Image (tube, rainbow, N blue to C red):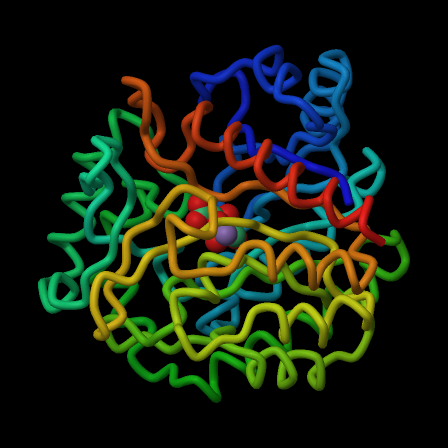
Length: 356
Ligand code: CS2
Ligand code: MN
């Protein structure tokens, strides 16, 4: 297992690589080119520049999060083939720079959805939260809140230029149900997995967050049954998963250690996001919490134990953190709470290693 930290690049992140280097046990920076519009080819020279910058700080760069998928691919429009060709070229360019894992998601229109980016917890910290009654509102209202509450940052998946067209996007998805979305994923995988095999790159699909239908849009990766269906589409191990404990854990029916025990031994999990969430009621409303098991609803020890037992050898990173110690950075992506999360996860791992 190698510990990683997500970084938005020197132009877009208030955290410096030198800060990341000082978190004990961090080896990897999980990065991306955030300025390339979704659907365009990531230029090789810019990828290599990012790699050199990360390596100069004494860290490695083998996981990209995310190369996002153009909506035309998810909708299945004829224009998808051009975007798929671009994606194939991006895979080749990333592989040439030593990237081995590409995280992506197949969520229509929105990446993750939260209804509050500054939910106050009892200890005075703030975290991201989701309340179902809030999504009865218009998507425009949620977009407006997220854009206004992001402390001036543009959050990935919430690009204002793209979401300015949100009504057109909703119209374009009108005929797309879960089966059609699955067919479109299948089409995409059929085109890109052979390229991944050729270049020794593994795709790592991120779960839908939250893993339930929202705004009438279909969902593709909510639980173990969905994962089996995605494996059946394309059994190559290049067709892999990101296991995001927070996202999957937002459905209390999901048994995350069981999911790990199913897919890590298949060699299908190059990348894990570790975070905890706390349910606020039995309607599935939740807020994100500190990583410690006792602060949330997930048993982080059982999760790390399953990873250890199955010989997980990929990259793991803390996912979102709370805003603590007066930090008010990119919501979910401050330095302090994610660093605390890393220290805790490393502690659990050391105990597991020494016990075995
Ligand atoms: C991340 C996602 O911030 C987050 O919630 O886990 O944005 C994730 O990067 C994408 O969904 C993966 O494509
Ligand atoms: Mn995640």
